[in-house]
Length: 302
Image (cartoon, rainbow, N blue to C red; front, side, top):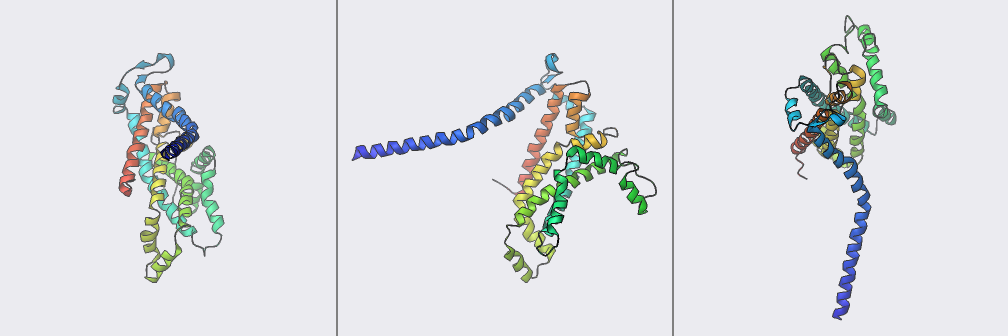
């Protein structure tokens, strides 16, 4: 009897080991891919950030590149611009996406499908194509100036692309226009799963539409808002296409982003791949810090 029990235990143990091996086999390919194309490049980039120059002329400089950041006016300008885009555009985009999702979740609204498609469509357009279109829209004789002149809102065309402040506003408008619909889809999907009886009970209790929005909709969408905030933050810190194709970082680095500065260090200026890798690690650090802050503010301890 004892031998039979021992045999059963051994068989059960072997089955558990076999299942464990099968599980590891399923994720092995993904682990290899992530390690090869994600972690290995990160390590190599860090080692590269400790060097200066390019190709065979690379030389070890230790932390000199990191010290150089604090004395680099172009980097400081790029960092300031990127943080400004982040602080203005991300909140505006999330608020607009929330408002649109609530409005388009109304079952009594006609042509909901058309409006949803129209708002989401910018998210699937070509980055370069839409950036070039915005460049022409906001040019001196573009449609934006023509419209403002026809409405008597301005007396002469605005220099959207050559004025430092207006150029920043143009970039913010462009990225808000593109990504609002993308975030709206997440909120709209989440709202489909909200129990309608909660809103009905709130109406019976006399809650207005605004009160329902702040005390029912936003708390229920909190995990999705956190997710979209982090994704939008990462995307804004990596901003490149709009700046490159609309203003080319000008005028006078007024719209230069960190990603475009990394590109310039690698391919436009005298190539310095080591310093470019150093700047790229600043982006990584910003992503980690800002994501942590957003988790803390949202109260997510998981």
